[in-house]
Image (cartoon, rainbow, N blue to C red; front, side, top):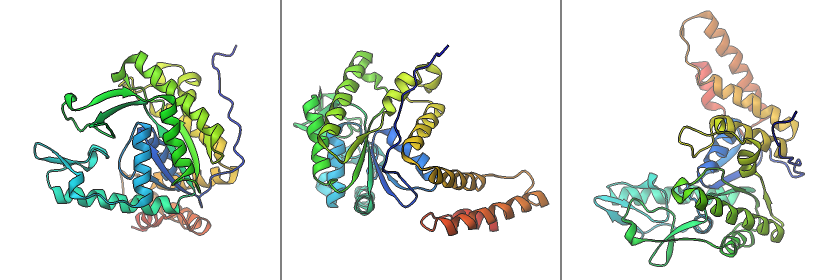
Length: 319
């Protein structure tokens, strides 16, 4: 008997390798994917301006990074003694206005460089619900009073327009892997979340039909249909568990990696995990032999993958 409905994902003809340059933009699920990529030595820049969840804020973020448009002091707002921008995540907030501005512009410059060098952009859409302030969609409300915002749900057409504008505009020379985040937005209510995701999914389908440089990866369907069980949901009942994230990543590998890339990924991952190990007996011969073995593996990988920086790991094993 079969108690699961596995999603069939055809291997993609155009593969990702360690020579690829990748940027991920979108919800926290984009950060999960980027973390998995980084652990295996892929070159990836994740959410330079912090997590963004709705399609219009994703589009605005990509546009700013593509243009390298720096923030000015006039772009910052204040809540008590805290300065912030409605266009970015709260990780940049702070009480020193100039320091906040400096961190934001450093992130823009880093993201501009990464996006310019990237051949692949992973875009993860989280919700079609938006908050508007003075008629403009904000990326984050920064705990400001709800009376300052108007909440509404984007239409399918609005989502399609936002993503197509990226695919045909600032990302026209990039490969775009489009996903819908499996993270549930329970603040919208289960009904509101279901409608929100339906809008995103239908919009994604239309975007793929219209834009030859966009392809869809079914992360949402993998978690909601293949892994249809609460054991694959974290304790907050919102985010996928680590096991679910790992499983989605395995399916991503199957789709986008060659066997050779997957093998190199595993070797890099093993070296990086070994460098995080803290021994009970650091003066033992066993630990010295382990470090020597791992150093040889790291040096061999460094020759095979010069684009993968393992200098930190090598220094650890030499120490």
